[in-house]
Length: 185
Image 1 (cartoon, rainbow, N blue to C red):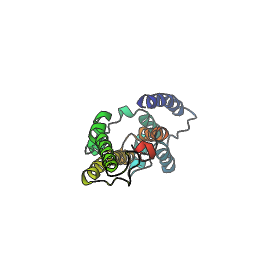
Image 2: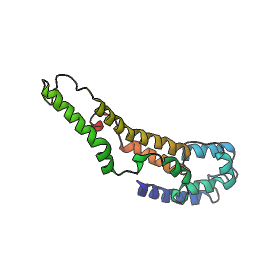
Image 3: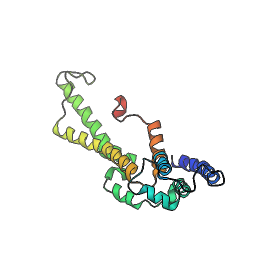
Image 4: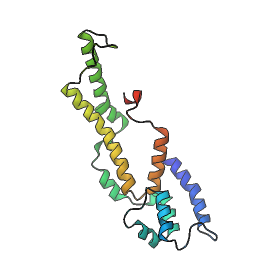
């Protein structure tokens, strides 16, 4: 994903160089509407102070900066995300700590229901979740809550707005809703 972003940035950087020359589509002295247009297109919109900040550095410089997110210090974003413990875990750690225990509890509930008069594939009633199982399910949902929360925080506060827009685009392109049918299990 990041490699694709770098490739897209390389292509866009070439057009930015052309855009900053004579006959450029990027105005030398943009008004607030032009700056706002770029902030809305290259990011998730203007935050307080963004229009003036872009005016000070120049619109072409802002665009060039967004095309190279690796050069943008985003330490405040890292501090905001520090409280989300699941973001730093590997897929294996997430499975071991959050997902496998829930699956095992569901399987045990099916076995218990089968023992009480049904079959594992067709229990007499939907197995009711016990206190421990509910706690495990709540813990599993914490992963999705952390992911959703960090996505909103990045859109609102990251200095790397173009990178966040591109990440959001490709995330939406390659993923399905987490609670959709078989993907939930």
